[in-house]
Image 1 (cartoon, rainbow, N blue to C red):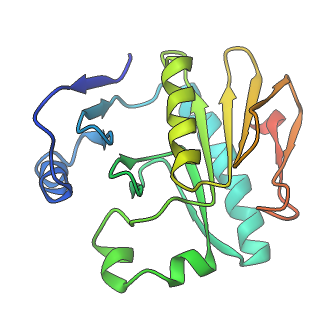
Image 2: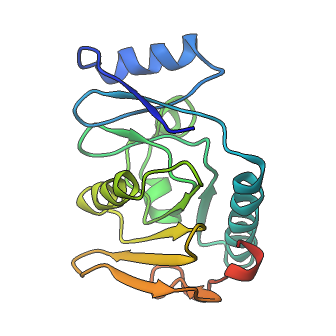
Length: 189
């Protein structure tokens, strides 16, 4: 199933948070233009893939203790006002420590993660995911991966650089953003 975008009058962040509280069984995002997007649950295979991805990122971070790892249910308020939930995200310790306790515990944290991953499920539009990846970069994300499980193609998004496309790689490097992190794609595909 594809995501559903509701065209309603632009919501404030407070109104969006209220909508989320009233509809806790729904996974919602809000675009910078005020569209509310309802994200359906993932199919089992996509959930398996996402778990393999998040587990590897978490294990690396546990060894390095360099930041915080977030799963696909986490919302971030980007500088443009959008509230987005990447499939996996990493925030440096410095970014996290700049937040107040309220921003850490009671809000969609107002920051762009340093690193994000979007995993394309069978029903996702590649064009919409590419737009989302560009939005992440435009709002301060330093490194992003778009993993297309349909084609086993990877698109690497780096701040200030052209998108790099890889055909069926077996591993990805976290480069200077996630030093020493290597994602084994055989555990994801």
